[in-house]
Length: 151
Image (cartoon, rainbow, N blue to C red; front, top):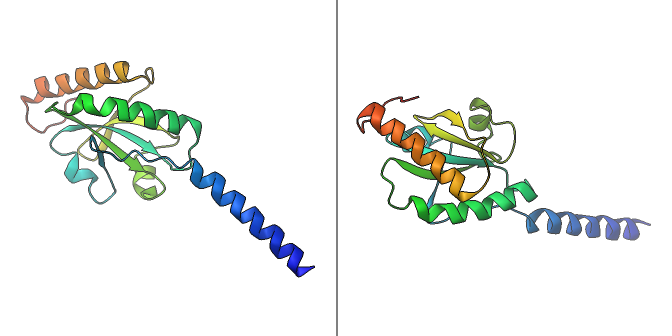
């Protein structure tokens, strides 16, 4: 009886691990900065960051956004006033809670360690790029290129 129960439990655990890790989301790459609770203020104090807040287990929406994010990344390689970033809210739970992130993926402009504006538009690279460049332009015009709150 114990042997059968052990076999059942181990097969269940195997299937659980397989399904949860097979869909893990990872936004890291050459064009997106990993943001954490420890580095958020420092990284976002001199430029506007367009950030995707996510959980690795998120599922289809996060997987789709991961592909969009990787397509969006190269477009910001030479943009001086804006950058892309990503934050894993399972590893930075307290920070995401403080920023009032309640769903995944959440897209937002972050400056000076705080969410300045949520992105609610279409989830395609062209629309997201236009939004970020527009907002970064407002930031630069309002601050003369200096680090200051622009919205």
